[in-house]
Image (tube, rainbow, N blue to C red; front, top):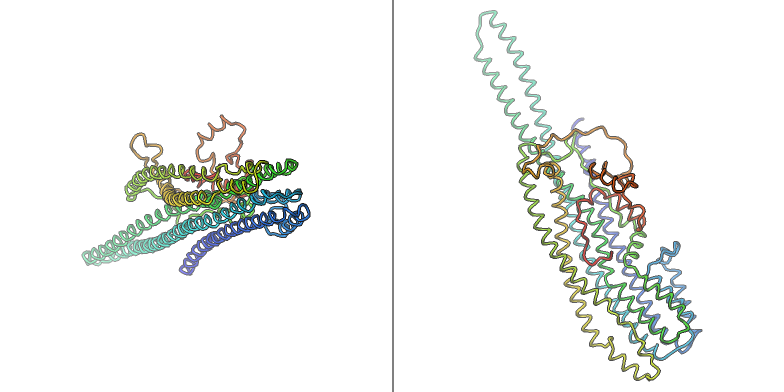
Length: 564
């Protein structure tokens, strides 16, 4: 019955772990699906805008009636769209979609046609929208490739965690078996010694001397006991090392998963958004310039649209998108340490004979981290410079077309001016080639930065856990380490609050820093911070609370080029 109970316990632990990993993998798949839906929605939006401006150029001669039909056509289409139902109920529109709504309202106010305006629509605005659509598809594919790489890294660390957990279970089972055999040998020795004493007393009474045989039997029992005791110590050492590896890998896995959900997901969405808002804003500003030059009486409606374009917010749209799909982008629960068969040790053991090994491992991690941080910082500086170059390309102010509306110019002169302008084919080809080349270099460096930061997070988590275990923090100035104490026995488990919102250490883990913080800011009455009062919606609150402890081990420097 005890063996069956043990097997059942092992199966329960493995089943719980596999269920947790399966949930994370399903969530990763759903994330790609959400990003793909966002990309398709943007492409549909851009296609609608291109068709809209093409039709508007043709309808300029029909004046108000045709334009009113066109606006109503797209308004009804939007009212039946899925995206409209997502955001319209709370008036929480994406900034780009809001601009599209205002374009339709402005169209209802149009009453006259002009040949120059038709030319600008066909040869400027539509071309820009087509380029934005190409950028959306290209950036989504590149971002998806990076996302696949990050997902593979998560699968890899969870698989490694599963392996070391199984190894720990195996060695712990062997340790328990050796301990049982040792206790059995001790009982047999005590029983044999007692029986030998009785026999000796009887032999002395009758004058017989059997001491050599009794001594030989006692020696055999002592050798058996020593053999089993050596086997027990050997298995116990293997179990301790396996448990240490399991705990270190557990910390590294939790740190990497936290980094992915808190930083990498946001950065991946930023890669998908790169240049989209800026390019669409430039296109809309071209449209605004043409409309302002055509008719001053329409300034009121155009001012509203210009305000919406100015309010285009990459970060705001990203937060709205993530908040709408919060279940897909919410970080999962942390991996918890699973003690095996009553094992009372719940932290890394630094007792001899593994203390020397852990000290060596700690110093190797410290040296490796210093080198990696320097290398990753250099890559980050390169990314900063590259992103600045991309931003300069994407934010160039080339949307002013007021010169095309000078009264002294004829239609032919307007076309000539347009052909020699910033939108000439030669200029466009050169600019777009430079842009795509710079993008390729940026993504190459971003992959390098991502790999380096992932490695730093894993090593830093192991380093911090070893530092806490070995006591490096308190004796560093004396060049010695604090003598490690025995791992505490677990206390009786109390029913706690849900971890999603209340996973915090007492005094934030540092009582002196907590008291000092109280002196500087007496208005704060708890260790939860101010994350619940800042903007960002439900998802921001969940991120702040769920991963508050793990996030302390993650470098706070974000991917260069992200909007703040």
